[in-house]
Image 1: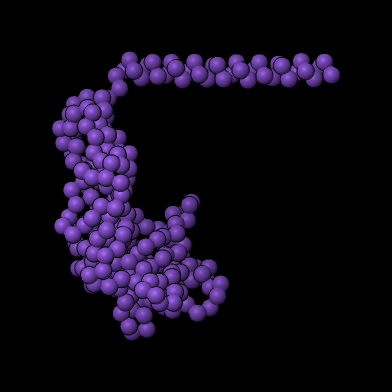
Image 2: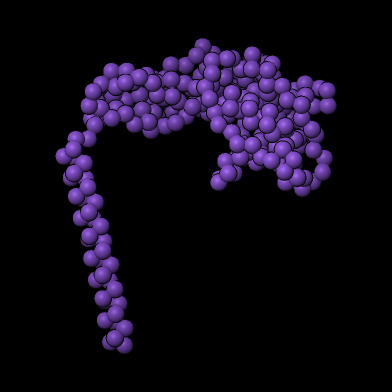
Length: 232
């Protein structure tokens, strides 16, 4: 069966995790075996990078899902391929739109000390000043980091932030050795005045008026169409 996956944030390093995230995988040689693999609790995957021929694998579904829940979407794995170990970065996941199960994984061959470009989640922490509304405009930013030193997430603190405060990608504190790839001017978090009850009432009245106008326009169009048909 396919395995559902949810993610949690932990503080362990990718280097420590790579040693723990060991998966014994199977080399897939048959074509069209993906459906059978998923039915048997394995996840089809392709391993590529460093000029090598793409290698089609099957991952143990339960173990791989557990790794992702613990290490996140940028998990670094130590793959046991026919007795030979290979470091790999989880590069992309194909998730079923309804069941939210892993259908396929793309894995990138990496080496210790090698830098890779990945997307990392942004987590908002803290309480902004009273009477404010905090909106997160961007959920992730692109960074460059060593494959074994990828941060699981980046943090933006809005503690006591006043209305009008904006946090762009360039203002996010990055760990040592990590470089920002995203546009530094990209808006990540915006702090504005919270809407008052009066603002919400006016907004609601405006929506009602728009709906009434749309209904009236539709009625007039229908009447005009009927009149045109009768005149023919």
